[in-house]
Image (cartoon, rainbow over all chains, first blue to last red; front, top):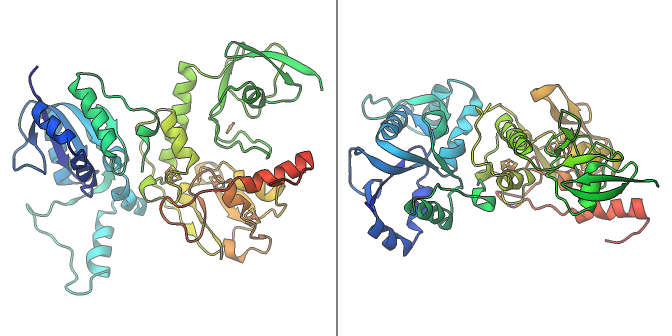
Length: 182
Length: 238
Ligand code: SF4
Ligand code: SF4
Ligand code: SF4
Ligand code: FES
């Protein structure tokens, strides 16, 4: 069998899901023998490649950059897995949605002007700092997602279960406590 | 009391006249998912998680408030029921703000555990992200409206076990909310005896003991059971 071409991406999340991925310990060594990791924050590849088999999505869709990369990933990947609560539910990043629609401005005001101790001012660097979306979205509200791997972060054994199922060519399936949020 | 015979999931059982389908199923060792039901307090059928199919009746009926009849044929599990239970759960999650990762009840929440045991891996509806507050005015307890599912367990225990009548519901539909007395800060309530029964009864992270942080709000239901046993069996055993 061809080696599975796997990618992982870090959108609006704390990187905790990727830390949990690294917690796979010695399974990472088995994994290295079975997959090609073609794109990920843990390797140095700048451009998302074509014809990827599986991509694990960490994080909610918070800004224009997140949205753009997620759309590109969808177009170039067979299976997308929402990886962790921020991707699955929008989780903590979406708390700003409670401030109402178009909270992107008020939230920046609060953080960079009202809360500033020195140099108040909303950072604007077109092309460098991506603008926030008016509302934070879970990944499946931006693109079609094939499978869901909840948890904040998902414990390593849960990640292992899904990866093992994918490697065996099975449909990923979690049940009971393996689906717990939080 | 006259007995009724009926069939639940193909099993012939008998139940007391006046028993609910939920009582009958529980006695027969059949589990029906419930959320607003709390042993020892009367049922109101608020959550609709306990819906079952009854032969000859087109609509689904709540097991906790439907009384048994002679010859009833009931199904507690089917494709259709699973579909509706999952929808109900997803709507509960979409209606308010449930951020399990930072919730006092994480790991000890009946809504959360029902969701995973019924296979909810994500919510297909748009989250509403409403703006609700937290009432932290009480010296011992707090109320976070973001996590409330309006099951009314708190209202029922406050009125019918404690007899204080502090907790009430105001508003309609998704704008309904649990209030204290005449919709005032809980800490200013004249009727609250600070017994904590509402906190012990709440299935979610909506009511909590102050000082509890993420995942720390574990409930001790034996305190409620103690009173219910005393009432129903006149036995004062903890
Ligand atoms: S109340 Fe339950 S379901 Fe809601 S956020 Fe808290 S733990 Fe999660
Ligand atoms: S603490 Fe007791 S009296 Fe006060 S609101 Fe809760 S149940 Fe009612
Ligand atoms: S506060 Fe808790 S017990 Fe009261 S209605 Fe809300 S979820 Fe139910
Ligand atoms: S348990 Fe029956 S409607 Fe809630």
